[in-house]
Length: 300
Ligand code: GUN
Figure 1 (cartoon, rainbow, N blue to C red):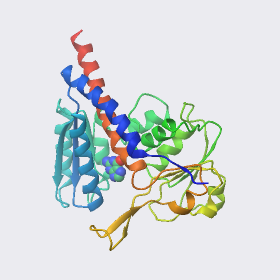
Figure 2: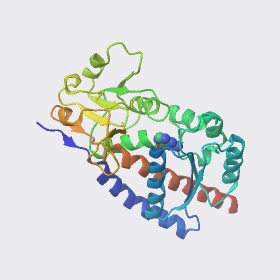
Figure 3: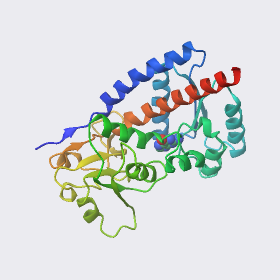
Figure 4: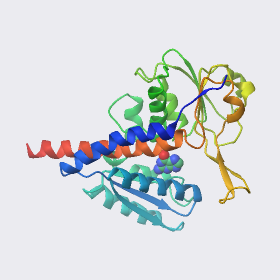
């Protein structure tokens, strides 16, 4: 039996329609949401993500301020610009596209962003608040995954979830969120990484599998427990002469074979990807809403 396809594109479309209304209401109240996206260098995948973020802002009526700097842009200049955007009242969200060139200290840049404008949810203040289950910005890809699970009526409570990968952007936060005492949590979570001795044995236990390693065909159908829910976060470019671009995108999962064994599966492209940008828009709107509340409090 073939798995149900979790359609990230359609789910993102539904959420974006909800967000468009929220953005319009904030604009009418004098607080048009605004996002600054900063790209340093010309990494093709990063350029493509940034283009998608700009287009989403336009679609939702969010003010977008995109800055693109050369790969040798000095760290001190970048810090200065972040400081300016922290003080700019038109801007509610600041995103610096990662990875950054090696001469720039990623942690220093993330920590320079005001936690109130950290719509990526990467600042240690937001990470700490997330772990403590306090009000924060949830990181966009994990938040998008939770939305896909919730909107597909997939219950995580009491399930065994296995996360492949321990990155700060996906693996660590999604593992944490899945075991939290929340509607989307209460799973028993295992995190696998490069030092896991028997990856296949761990995957075999998974009711819910989150693959975020960035390597094609890491997950094959023989590893999958029949009926598992498979969320593929990988976005890998592989050469394909039949494409105009010369490549095609695949995930970390051998989709064609695994879909015959899973109960639910996300495709690549069209699964988690569209949700990441959508949750970035949601966080930007949330930040603008909080800014409006603070302004109203001050004028009371
Ligand atoms: N690079 C890959 N994913 C992300 C993301 O979610 N945010 C930022 N800032 N950079 C990324």
